[in-house]
Length: 390
Image (tube, rainbow, N blue to C red; front, side, top):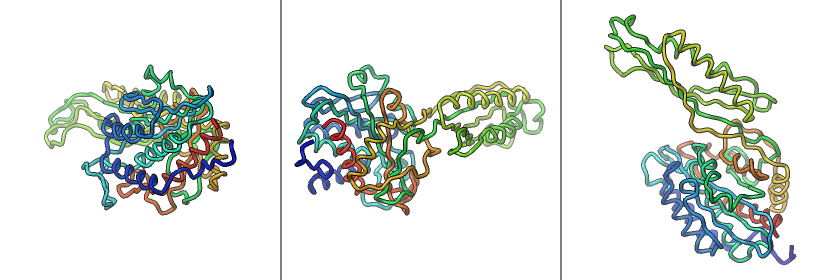
């Protein structure tokens, strides 16, 4: 790498100002998972001005990939961000708050998208020496469906990476510090929905019907009891009951149907299969004992996110070059991240950048993405790009 290149501080003050304005524009107009059409269009317009060699749109829904080719053949490095917002009413009080009631960027995906878009400035001025960089703007991260849909898109084969990197802002970690380590960093999880069906009855004669009440009452503690261990243990599982309902809001009708939703969580994808089997066995037992039929379905399915040692080393070199202290922190996290699938066909790693110890937590209604993280995060990524591709 020529000594006269300073890739760590590649943004001009005017560019940083434009990026903050872009991030706040995204923030004003949040779109939920699978609905990111206008967000994607804004990304295409912004990044397109930086002259990528190719832009793919509609990947796995509303995904966007901007490709910058190197001068010589070489590996492909994918840098990934997310487009979607959350179904939460924002209470930040910001002058650029969400203009869509009940929807808001309260996980920082607007900031992540802007951080990756910032790389287009540096890549416009200087393409990589070899290989290519793919700036990936992924849809539907919050539901766990986006990365699978992008990877299943036939066009993904043309940009399949050798290395994939990403970041997530993390409240509770001090500003200027990062958390990263090889191995599992985020758990596998899936949403389980159970529907129990019996028969309604008059409230004065409940014995003439078949109520789901006893089955639901038994299932809630039984499912929760499947959880075992701490996330730092070799084997860890957790079941969280998130919703229960039965019947209709009426005094004259004994319920004949019920619904239970729970999140199943394990450290590895392999252990998830065993937890699913155990949970389904409990449902079958409770339904049979109560004389009910049942249906089970799954949604929000996330594979475990596993950091590859080579990708971790690349990011650690970038962190060191940028003067960002880092350690393994509280990894692995119990939460899930849709980035994991990109690492299944490539060497992948995610780094968690501190958003501040007093920053409201992710998914809180008053959460605010720190704008200074755009330059910090993109500087780390740019150093990794130049280190890997020249």
